[in-house]
Amino acid sequence: MRWGFMKVAFLIFSYFHKNQPNMPVMMHTLLFANELKEKGDEVKIILEGEAVLWAKDLLSENHPLKSHFEKVKDDFVVCEACASMFNVKEEIKGKLKLENDLFGHVSLKKYLDGGYRIIEL
Image (cartoon, rainbow, N blue to C red):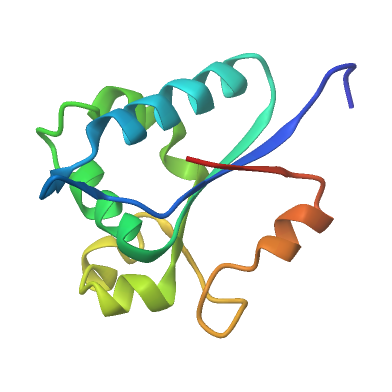
């Protein structure tokens, strides 16, 4: 492990703001995650609740954040229970990592135990 190495997990719950996707939240999440990753840190972007809708959006070919997303695509973790509830599971299955360690949801304890700092946006 190098000096200053960090493990950061961004936890996103929100999608809508004034009845439309909250682009600033995802744009900043992707910017921060890309910055850390480019510096050699480990990142995860965890989507819970309505935020699982981002998974479907970001996978579309013409999404305005597509280029930022592609750099950290493999670092996304999507709640399987929420993906099912919001009807996006089948569209993202095999494209983004689905987790269900905590009664169908993502286990934050797993990431905390793994040395990740959790940042909620």
